[in-house]
Amino acid sequence: MNQKEKPRIVQHNEISDILLGNKHLNFFATAVTPWNALSIDALLLFLTSQGIEINALIVIAEHYQAGYMIDETFFTNSCSKFVFLPYDKELNHQRFPFSPPRITPKKFYSSVFKNTPQQDQDLFYYSTFNHTIPEALIAYNLRPLERPICICYTEEGVGAYMGTFDKTYPTFNHIHSLGELRSFIRYKIFGRYVFRFFHKTFNSLIFKRTLYGLKVNKGIVPYYRNVITKQFLKLPLDNVSTLQEQSIIICTTAWRRNEILDNEDLRVLNEVCTHLAQNGYHLLLKTHPRDTYFATQEKYLRCELVTNTSLSLEVLCSQQKPLAIVSFSSTTLITSHIFWDIPVFCITDMLNRSKISSFYLDEIDSFKRTFYRHVIFISSPKDITDNLNNYKH
Image (tube, rainbow, N blue to C red; front, side, top):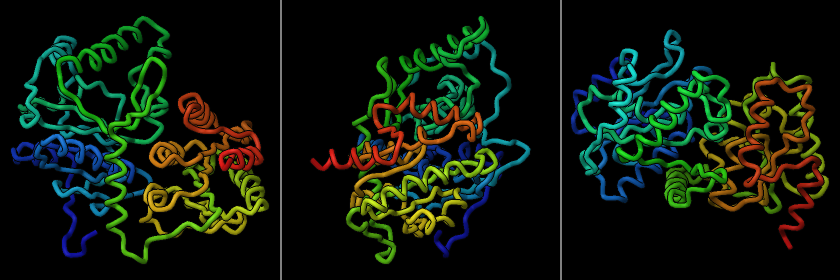
């Protein structure tokens, strides 16, 4: 953070006043994680490449467990002002800038079919990483702005595609009653797909949903690479690490320790790292930003710890690609493969499922079901070395 300027702290009810009092602002986003920041930057870069002049307000929100995970230095764009939003325990979640009364069906469908101007410069761009809320509801929430709204979706990692975050609005596969069917038709069919017919939307999501599963959104990938390069150029020279030859990066998760019996994930990682080290591979340990456990296990895992927290895995891989990346169900596996064509291996099939909580079993199974085309799932450490040997040939 710039030491010359004190961060501006705002309360939740102040955000709407800022948006209403500054008509020159035409973009709003909330960011909690480095991944949010990267995706917002990619979206802004895309919008400006379309000739749209952006004046953005970005709210950096405090994480309910980890505190502030980012500051304005995590962004590369030059069109944003930043404010910081403390976590509100009473709200228990981050809400919209405007809190409308309960929406009636009539007002909901009015929001769906109310057409808006298509001139990009006249729109107010509202960016969200919560993919479950229908666009029609977001637009209705923002009606006090009295401006045509363009909903933009940004990334929140793999969980957003797996459906493990917010299940307020059921998917087709989870319909079990007539009420859920009505909810699906109203909020998913009309609130999302019909809404998009009448309203312009943008996104910086790296996947598109198709009838055949997830498909890479190839049009946005170059913007991510561009932002990642800018992030690298912002780093001091002494912060730049070079991967050694024969390096494999081991990435950890931030699973809650009380939901993993007998440190089962550590057992699996140790088995994998032992095999790889015995086969001559140099191992780098890159811990999750919220992980405080595995960073103390580097020697046990035969790894060299990447201690620079400002060096994201995406930046690390952009400068020199490792031979492979190994992790449990993690966003890093997806981004590394899509952005840099790096072999990625998921080791969740090696876990003893009886020692993993039902919550994480749901996450593990959803990850495999969603991303099986993009990740190699292994059942033994030997699968990694066999695949890498084949990859070389």
